[in-house]
Length: 293
Ligand SMILES: Nc1ncnc2c1ncn2[C@@H]1O[C@H](COP(=O)(O)OP(=O)(O)O)[C@@H](O)[C@H]1O
Ligand SMILES: [Mg+2]
Image (cartoon, rainbow, N blue to C red; front, side, top):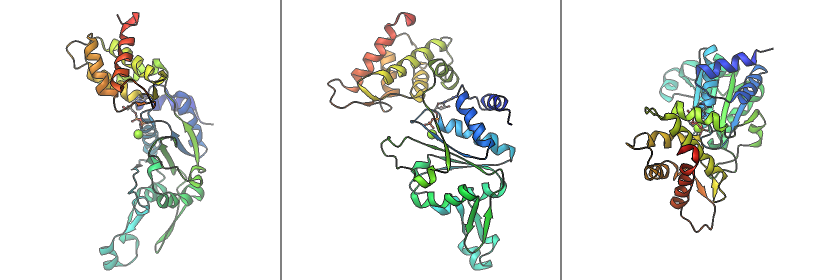
């Protein structure tokens, strides 16, 4: 049995993770039984932050962790490795001529491989992961078959399939992961995240963080908005507002909120109001609430 509570607390403290206690518990349990983990959630919910903390935590036990950020250009050899042509000419197809990739190194050394935004990985590259995840075996043609160290472990993140511009992760690969969904955190936790992450030096940091959290909260509840802002929007907003001489001015709040959220929210179709007007109304409604007067 693993001491989940202790490990979760350790991860939260070491990597400044606020909350996510339930999700961390699930991750620690999955890891304890040798399962790979896929974190899914909208842009800005904290997937990368959490996965990075986990991979460093478990990777440092094995003194190594490997990170891959996916794009359409990530080819199998970027993950697995390749024979270096000049070395092959000089020495032939031998170990010395081979440049190991992060997947192979993590398998050999028993490290953690962190695959960020795995849904952006081309299908051919996804396929090169299958046998490693499945059976812990990776065949390197002309060289050798690699068998994964017992501590080899993969944690990946992805945006939900409903998200625009996202390719769907192959069923075969998805099957190899324990799936953990990340939703928005509670207002109280978000408040603490804003205070921790936004660069605020003023003595009214509490107030700025509270207002910023309320604003993004309303963007999620508004019927005019299809996709509201994540915590990242509130962090940007609080950081910006803190730069103004007068953070009590509603004009400054509106300006900063438009700057911080304009590209982070998506409106419903067929509205008569502009995005700027909708943002302005939200800010004014929040500022008029009695607790912020
Ligand atoms: N639980 C949390 N504790 C501390 N900071 C967090 C937490 N969740 C999110 N953040 C902060 O929010 C921002 C966005 O998180 P990120 O991991 O980049 O999101 P994603 O990868 O889902 O797009 C980062 O600045 C991160 O530090
Ligand atoms: Mg990310």
